[in-house]
Length: 436
Image (cartoon, rainbow, N blue to C red):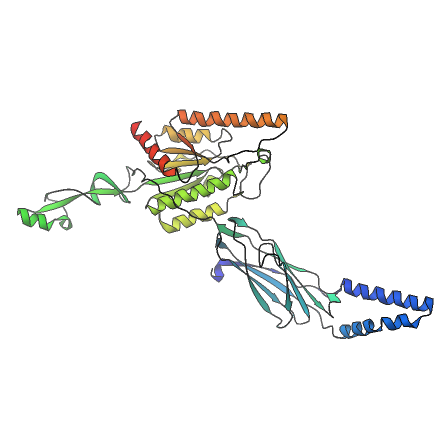
């Protein structure tokens, strides 16, 4: 990461020294010992606390001026899952300090060691620690804090807090064996061979030269053998498009009772986590073949990714998917069919838990596009124990089963997500399309 890719959050300096609990305990000991000496007339009690008094006086004599500690945390804006991500924590203004205690944010630094004690010299220090990137998504590590002390810990500043910026951790991109998509009837470039004549790499035949043929198409070996100019006749290389439609309105976990809860993030074992993993796997697999891949967010259409090719397109899709947060309050606007290129293959990833997804899939099926409906609802659901809630859950699941059956009757191939079977499903979809 370059410095331009990092964001820093700093905190205001502390205002002054405040007595700690150690100082309060010293005062209590002095008051109690003085009272006991006067009441019992035992000077030995005062002599017992004399070393403590001398030590306290020496510590207070060494107290320095006004403290001004500052804390700044620099976080990378983006990281790879299970990759290296470094957080730079800068502490300054330690001239009047003796002890510096740094509180690490959750997930940053060595596990099980949330506190780090630093020396007060030099007054400006930087500490580089690693951040946990074991889970993808928008990761908020919380806040870091620093507190400095003087006079052997008798006086300290209030805790100076600096909040960390969220880090976008990209989901992993895995590839599977997938078949080639059918080439689009429109378009003149791409990685797929067609039978239409034109500029391309696939040789159709060799014919005699005609007026208007390009000189670079002349096959000099055939022409020399036959004594007449011949040209190579090639087929156009067309492109193929895959559009992934992602339903981000719900993130349904195996626990049915949690479906009504509002989620603040993506549960990687829930339906949205499965859908995001499936979308990246499909995108990475087909982008590797040279196809164009786009992404449509059904909850917020303007957040989609236009179809494109190459490594940068895969990075755009991963970056977008890493920032998705489910929101059941979002209502899908009228789907713009123009966002799906003509002739493109479409994969709809959804738990199909309500009937708002039906018009979209039905419209795509009626336009004779390759449509594959992928069910991402988790397996082995944990049903509620209450009789009324159990009956309601069974009713919702029965409606969902009928919804998927209705899509199948329309000619839409419906299947559960399985990375090992996606290639087989795509081939089956193409065979059904050719036989229709």
